[in-house]
Length: 250
Image (cartoon, rainbow, N blue to C red; front, top):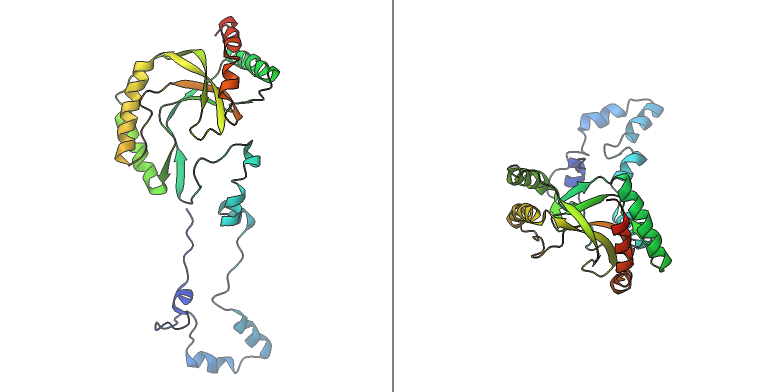
């Protein structure tokens, strides 16, 4: 992490300050010595102001954008219509706990058929970039919480044993802000083991004063999403989509 510290001359050189300006004062003998320098050399010496800073490279400036640039990134048109559910603040990191899923070829084929069926009914959806099963809500961590948070999760989850989950039923979901609708595949086996994980994760969340998971969660893997609350319209064709699922080999 890069931290910009103010120089002592900037801190002490403010108008009205009682502190001595150590960064800008020069001994009298230095002034006396400069009188005997050639004009060109004297001018060069006077140009070396200790307050002068070299410009930062562009690559560093892009790593730490100013507030105006941060505001521009909140433009939903730059994120496929997605809307930020809470305001971005420097030093805050959004995170959630999940189980990753690596899709097989049959899953990819089913997903393409589902997307085509949605489009045929006027529901233009975006497929998920990656697939996972969430076991926590999205929460915001302060930067200095990150390592203790991870250590707490590792300590709590280390005794958990491996288990198998299967998902078979298509289901429609909508986020709390009603800004996005999701088509997901709900877990049919492994629910009890997932609840055991959630209880451990919830303890860490509570220790950090963060939101715990839903009381009666519907564990699922999201397949695709669209902007807005299109829950009812998607449910109208859910039976047709479920037929595609039954005819697939997964």
